[in-house]
Amino acid sequence: MAQHVRGVIARAKGEPVELTTIVVPDPGPGEAVVDIQACGVCHTDLHYREGGINDDFPFLLGHEAAGVVESVGEGVTEVAPGDYVILNWRAVCGQCRACKRGRPQYCFDTHNAKQKMTLLDGTELTPALGIGAFADKTLVAAGQCTKVDPAASPAAAGLLGCGVMAGIGAAINTGNVGRGDSVAVIGCGGVGDAAVAGARLAGARRIIAVDIDDRKLEKARSVGATHTVNSREADPVEAIRELTDGFGADVVIEAVGRPETYRQAFYARDLAGTVVLVGVPTPEMNIELPLLDVFGRGGALKSSWYGDCLPSRDFPMLIDLYLQGRLDLDAFVTETVGLDDVEEAFARMHGGDVLRSVVVL
Ligand code: APR
Ligand code: ZN
Ligand code: ZN
Image 1: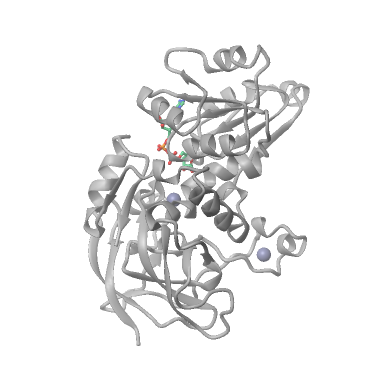
Image 2: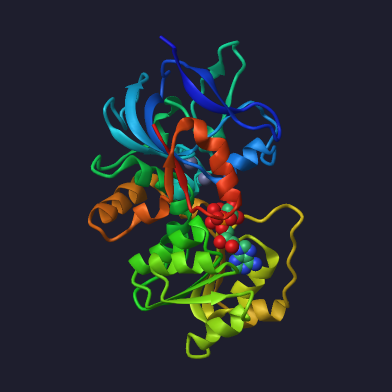
């Protein structure tokens, strides 16, 4: 029987979100219905509401979530009712050229649930990032559920579903930060701070946080930055070089997504160092660099998609490290709010006061 539950939707471009009744069908083959326990409020939800992603309104918002599997459809073997899971955007296919080469983290043919959740009048909803978890329950592809230790609090665990995983993964997966490395992180919002935490976890020796806001720098220190640079007051390239014996950092993580900060990242790394772009640029942005510098400085210029994470590998591992006190995911939860507080949480996010507001159900 399809269920009627509460969900937060964006009905039309720019309009405030609303809490309404949605219809969640029973899971079909390969699908699962998940009882949501917590879901973080992310910039991407706001982008959906503003029409910045596509025009497939109405959207069912929310995508950084943890919960308990309520029921599964035919043929589902990876999870079972009662499993405590973190949701990810996309289930990997196992068949495409990336999957076949043993690189499922790059799967080029990921999928979500086939059935649609709807409004009471039958209008089909588009779930944000194929999840839609500002709701009591949501329908996903079973492969979007990754089982983790239920001892982890849902508010902290859910964050691994998106921004925090992107940042940690930018450091530990894409940047391949290792013991003794020097790392600089430009932009210390939720993603950048997670990159700082990831660099600490990986054994970085110096972690230099760069931002234009002193409040952000203070927070970055609390999650592991050893040095901070306010790039409004000092040239960040110079400052990073000074803090790395004049050479630059081994790995520089750009977590803003702008040409000027990418340029800083490019020049703030040591010879043969790595730049990781995890900030997401917009279509009109361009960058020009001397090709001789691209060649002459060597190393690697990489982009990090979702932290190059493989949920089945990374989520349970990071949850275990969290439970052992080695990764402070709680530091990313600024406040917990209710399902009817999403609109106000957007406003606070805009003001830069919070790393993450998390809806707890
Ligand atoms: N130099 C340094 N820091 C900057 C600059 C700049 N020119 N401009 C902005 N920042 C800082 C902000 O002060 C803020 O602390 O970058 C940070 C961005 O943080 P958030 O807005 O909270 O964004 P976050 O959720 O961390 O995401 C960062 O990653 O996944 C992408 O789409 C996401 O592009 C975004 C980026
Ligand atoms: Zn694939
Ligand atoms: Zn997100």
